[in-house]
Length: 280
Picture 1 (cartoon, rainbow, N blue to C red):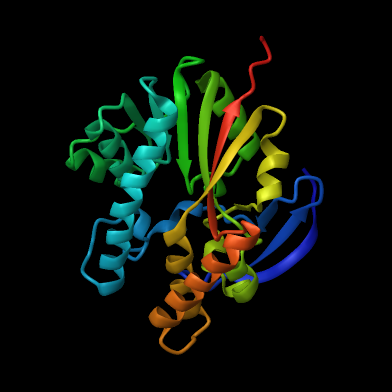
Picture 2 (picture 1 turned 180 degrees about the horizontal axis):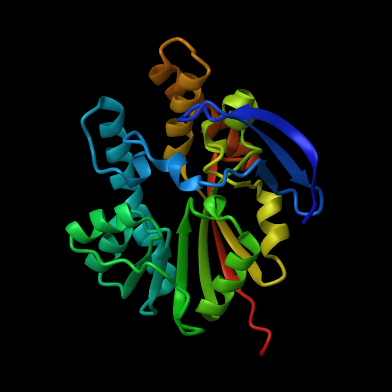
């Protein structure tokens, strides 16, 4: 890929305040965050990073926890629909909530999480997560889920190859990503919280997902993630210093969802892809 088209200058409003730039690969339409910091792990080291947190001591954190609980049920139902009795792997499992939910639902589920602190939290709630996938057998899983994970991966080409190797023939990949063509992304521009630089290294629209995966995977369907636009718009309104950011963000997030009913450009989308069976 050749990221040679400057698209947007923006800032890490969440933690460091440092400036970054998004460059576009014209062939795939994928955007890349540059420069990539050497010590990327340090950009996750905040108590406010809710993806790796179990704290609910603020109103916003409690709202996040409620939405997360509803989303877990929805994710579990979707995964069960496509996995059946085949083994499931959740890549980027965080603190293990989805793996735990899948096990409760009776699925044969495992999780992989590179962050040691998140794995420790998962272990404390009885969920053992893999720290590496290096020595895994091929064609092992019937379904792999990656909810808001691919955008964090430094080498997405190697990640795609690994997923292909781990999946059984006709295996399913469920991939959730922010959509930079959504209404809220275009409204907030550099303040859009789902850019989340530099933690998000790559950024996708719907066409970029198709372009990147089409050689190895067939797109079966897209599912909107309704709550994501609300969460992202609240954060974005806060970054933009808009009045009453919680209320403003809710209104703008709902408006983004309403607009997406007509053009399918939701703030975040879960893509269901099937591994192509070239042996058939």
